[in-house]
Amino acid sequence: MLVALVGLLPLAFTALPDPAAWPGSALIVWAVLGVAVYPALVLIGRWYVVRAERNERDTADPVERA
Image (cartoon, rainbow, N blue to C red; front, side, top):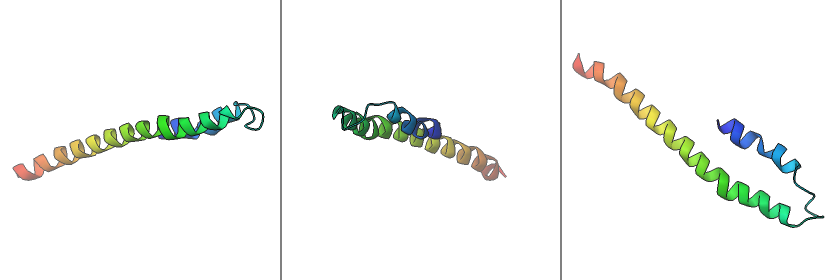
């Protein structure tokens, strides 16, 4: 999921016009990198932590019962 999100960004950025011809394209790149990517990274990280805690809890239950 992370690779699909961040890995395809260079391809999307090549579709933008040349920054020398249209100065706003550099602003779009920084807006995407600074605003759109980080919340997605936080959500992916949160999902990972929840899954890891669930796996740890499921593994600890049989050990505690023994």
